[in-house]
Image 1 (cartoon, helix red, strand yellow):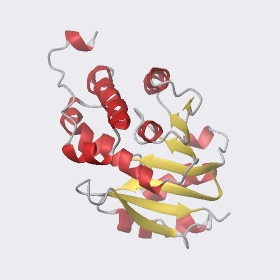
Image 2 (cartoon, rainbow, N blue to C red; image 1 turned 90 degrees about the horizontal axis):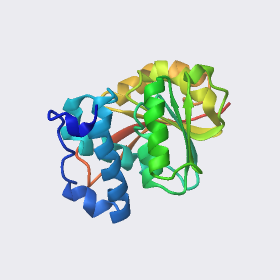
Image 3 (tube, one colour; image 1 turned 90 degrees about the vertical axis):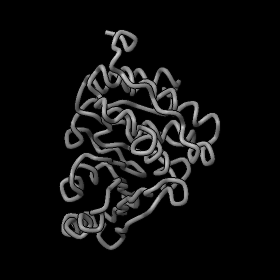
Length: 220
């Protein structure tokens, strides 16, 4: 079944003005191409729901792009539970200086991710790993990212083993980020990360609402 064969598919909305004002023409072009793939093939293959298409820019693509503000140059990133590539693949499309490992448990999602890696010629910088985070060998990443996977308390034992000492967990969270951080203090202590855990805000001035991240630096 092709996207053209399904008249119920909604097209990707136009690029928001605030994105064009912030991101380069080349970056917008890459994100648009990826967004088109999500809005068509991604819906058909069950990677995202059709109701997500109208909000793909502001709720998904731009949120993940804004997350790049918290990523240092030349970082090695591991994205846990990347799904269709949010935020890991978006970060790779926005930043050409980073290396990204996309970890996903579902084969069909990994197949799509591999197609996107080939489509955007990212083979030298992006690796797709099929498996559960707790079963994948430690990755020694500078940053481990996660978005819409689980509550922070549950996420920590999946993510922290892949963070190098001195590296960080960056978890995208919503309005209850502060509550989740407080509830996860005990889990963070295990990794000597509670002292250097904080909330970060990205996208201020061009995304409404801005993106809230929990940042926790691993001490051991």
